[in-house]
Image 1 (cartoon, rainbow, N blue to C red):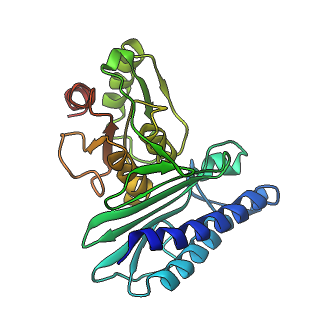
Image 2: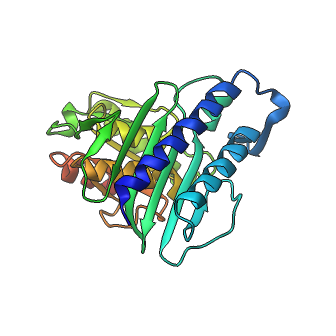
Length: 263
């Protein structure tokens, strides 16, 4: 398998799907929005985009399976599986607010080998594949060189259906508000992770996430020279519903602070 050639086909598919998503924002009506929860939305744009992406990816790698947010296909690959969020940031999208992204990762025997995040509003394509650097619109990117939490700009997100850790999370949020350059919350985990990869943010943490929220962005962070873990400092970040992503210099300090508050 040549990941570079696969990326070339995936890029074309992602840009085409992104154009559809961008065009539909002017057409979507309140009746088109379904509620999965009080602040968890899905639209025909999510579902159509996912079906379009799945169909295109089958054409690229016919033996592959899928893990998708909208569950438009039920197919598990023996070796290759795509992890897809067709519209990460749907709440932003239905309110006409940026950012929102397409997120696609490919796994080979459970190892992520390709990651693509397309932030549609700024036309920014973040990507990488196994053995390659990370890129933003064909320019190489790297994580920041910020050395301490006190000097850092931190990204996070808020849970929308799992509030079991909310008090701990709010205590941690207060700590970072008092001991960093600030907190940002964009509403798209895939975009947050991509911003860590290119150095706009120094670190990111969040819980109550799914594999399709983080797979591509986290892999891009790793290929950009950063580190990723769960709140315990382990490797259960893809399916464990919690993630930390950071540059190398402040990774240990940040991880230890999160672990102290959240566990």
